[in-house]
Image (cartoon, rainbow, N blue to C red; front, side):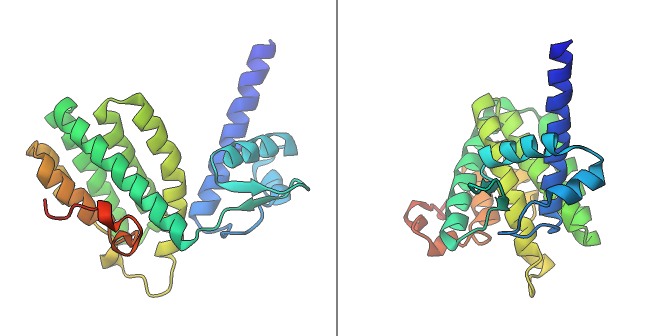
Length: 225
């Protein structure tokens, strides 16, 4: 009986966690803003207990900071934070793609292409929320195909921050849809089983968005492939 209750608590906390993440990506809670526990309680018809458990999970994932008076404040991003996230994302995707070339099947890559099509369709529709979600789905699926469970776990944790940052960037005045990179060159490289082609494609996909050429990591970039 206690085990069932514990599972219900975990599932409810995860449900609240996912709802708060959606609020972040939809820019309903801004960077530096406080997590509105009372509002969430009313919206989801849940007590404060699963909300506070969800906030603890978010804190462990680095999405919120909890002050001594237990107020949860959403993270903000400095320029250095963006460079750091971008470099880790690039490193993860480089490894994931190279492993996927050896471990993935054509059917796996076709599934990636279908996800990419959905991602692009949402971008055309101006549905930024689902564009962000399907972009994360694409890169997490790539890590899944790679066949390394530790890489996949790290990738999923990282993509929560990435999704939030993307939502901030896409909402920025003056941001143009054409600045959103597409996945077609990545898929072609995977289908061709060509590591050099993949390395070039994934760097082109990420370097500009995270401004890595102007970061401390520029010496690690290899754009000659």
